[in-house]
Structures are given as C-alpha cells and as structure tokens.
Length: 290
Image (cartoon, rainbow, N blue to C red; front, side):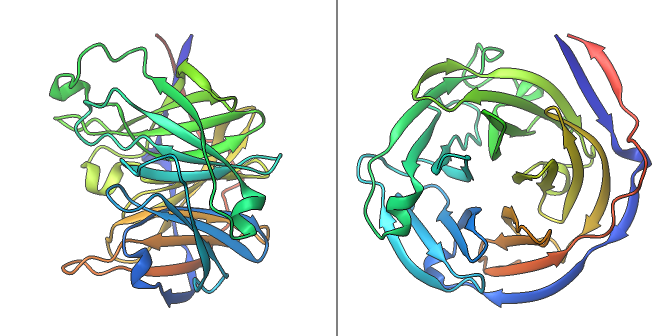
C-alpha cells in the first residue's frame, strides 16, 4: 500500500468571494454537518451532546422542519453525506481524545427526512486498524474525524490531526455503505499545513462531480478529485477564524459553509462562497511506501 503526502507549500494563495452571509437559527448553534439534498434543500445536524436530529433547510439557512433519529444518540455527530441512491450518512465519529471504541455511521432514508418523518437508522460500525491503544501516545493521535463524503460506492473519511507536536497529517480512509462492522481502509494522507490543529486540521469535506473541498477553521481547499485522489488545488481564505465544521458544494459550484455560534470568536452563520479559479497545474506529490 502507498501513502500519498500532498505537500502544500507550493499552493496558489487566492481569495474566495463571500457572496452572502445569513444568520442561522439558535437551534443550529452547534452545526457540524451540511449536505445538499437537492438544488433547493440542505440537510444539517448539530455537534455531539445535542439531540439526534436532522434539520431540513432552505438555501437561506431557514429551517423548514426537523426530524429525530429514533434509535440513536448523538455521541458526537461530525459530518453528513448523501449517496446516489437516496441514503443519508451521519458520521458519529468525533473522537477528540482518541479513546472511543464505538465509532459508527448512521444510515437513514433521505426521502423520509424530506417528508418530515422521524427515521430509524442502520449502523456502519468501524475501527481504525492502525489504532491499538485507547488513547494512543500524543504523537500518534490521528484518530479523530470530522469530515466525510460519498464518492463512487464508498464513504471517504478525512481524519483530524491532534498529534503533539502537530504534524498536520490528515489520513484518508474508506468504508463501504452497507450496514455492518468494518476495519476502515487507509488510502493515503494529506498535509495542508503544519502550524497547529486550529488552522491546519480538517473539519469538514464534500465531494461533487470530481471536485473535493476540505474545510478548516480559517479556509477551504479546493481539489480536483479523480479515481479517489486529489490532483491539484486552489487555496481560498475565508473570514477570520471561527469554528467552521460544515461544508457543502451546490450544483452551481458555489460552496456553502456554516460555523458554530461561540460567544468569544463569533459564528452562527451560513456563508455562500464563490470559489477562486483552480490553477491549471497538477499539484506536486510525494509517494511513500507504508
């Protein structure tokens, strides 16, 4: 197996255009996942410790209705994805301390959610085969995750680096979409920066039409995505640092980002962003054997 480390020191640094900002309801004060159900509808959820609810939103962020997942708790919901068959996947895999042994993804019907029906989930339970201690040593804390999307027939998970010292590695894993118990399949890793987890750790992701967007607290990174691998990217600076954990790509190419509402650093908004043009070059990469 090969790991691919994408060294982003050669990135083009360009600013995105924030086209619109709207205030979200206090019911979404800890929003941590966002996905498009169709061109006029978003689905969202809150972070861990809140009720296991899914919110159906208009494009301006206003709430149409919400439904409850009746057979689950929100231990730590971190992202949401939609497959090509009308299934939603909610990642209950937040793992700040890297000590959870009950990581799971909930699978529910999109149509029932849109029809304002409470839903019962099926479960994709998983573990990281590389993790053998709970928690691992500080320099091996690679097993938090806040970002997930669907691509081809698989779920792609992008881990959040919490190592000390911080090395910036985001490992990319895949899982099947059928309910069951699995070992996540490690594909490669990305490095978008090595400063600290507050600026250079991945907090959200979406894939649409061979485009991958990754989110941190202060920016988005836009990649072309071919055969399950990112190829090149443009670097889009967002607003001042807030707790941004939710991102989704509209069919128009506009990117929707939401942040949690915090007393000190602000947030609680939905941003509509026109991404900067991607550079027409292939990003350099370094391949390493495991």
